[in-house]
Length: 539
Image 1 (spheres, rainbow, N blue to C red):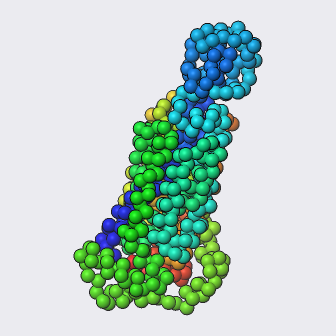
Image 2: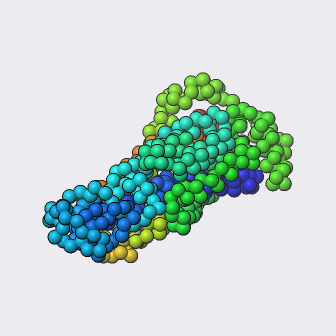
Image 3: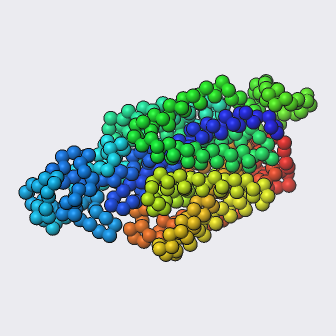
């Protein structure tokens, strides 16, 4: 269907930009404790740019500091707060003697040499979640926003997959967008941190299926020739959304205002229910041939094309092999376990997804040290993904899916290993190698959605893609914990990323090549991938 659905593809791209791009910004959580640490997740989360990143320190009541907005760095601060090479401590102070000073005069003899934990805090900014809910030194609670976001995404994917395969791609997409918008907007009015976290979980548990819905929608619009470009464009919109919204977050820093600015426009995309046509592939898989014919005639008219009667009859003629009826009666689980080929894929693809999310978000989290500006860190690590996505376009249709995917895993792994052994004083070289590692995993990101979609039959495609992505959230849940391992040795996170990349790169080589094949509509076609029975199709 060359060129027949360009308008719908643009609309889906806009959904990805405003929907999942927003989710990704929300997953970034970076906290400051004296020096920067990378706890949190770059994907999925406004809780990052808005709930992380507040400089804070102990509130010294003995020196007249009575509120969270007291002067952040008074002249007498060295008398009350321990120092190190990295700066003043954020969570510790010298024990008071019981004698009080003032904000103008607070000498060192008012404090013992003993160090105690802070009981209250002052903040450099008064427009963050950390300030409003007084989360100073509570790193795990701040990181919980990103973790709950990933858990919610894990929970929503199988549900979204079921709705999409059962009731249609369009229904699943609109439901996800509406929930994303509604519960995200409610979160702007949180009165305490538990409420904020609760709606963080509810929002993603009910609305984080936006990207997978939009991606499947777009992928099913086109044939093999344009499938790679469509895949790269979808994932590029993902990153364009991150860069755009990272810039908005930089300009609109009050967190409640930022949430409203990001979520209110999403409500307009609900109107796409009346703009988008249902996926022809889905309609055909459900044997709704009359509806499929209407959609095909509509896109042909819009693009000033004519579909011949023989072509239309060929498109609308169901293959109806005997296995189909059996598949339908047995259901997804029995079908998977009775097909050894499909079972191997179902066991293999989730490992790719775990690795991709673990490395992708892990690198984003550990990007906090790339520059002194959190927002610039975020924008840089997102912007480098875009050339990675389109690099995949250049090579996927030339060298194949398997070499591209495994090569991306291996390349990222090599960069992560090299990063460990580059001296810290070689800042520029470390930055280049770090971004190259993110570039490599971005190539994987584009290829992964496409390759996973091509391995499964239409009837179960979204459900099995959602299952792989759901299990993959294990990577994004554990990624925020990697900076903690740097206490033992700074190179541990990078070596973990490399080890997972090597493992997944090898597992990719166990699956069939799908270059030049049509997307399988039936189980038999899916099982035939990589064999001489599999021939190039037109849809």
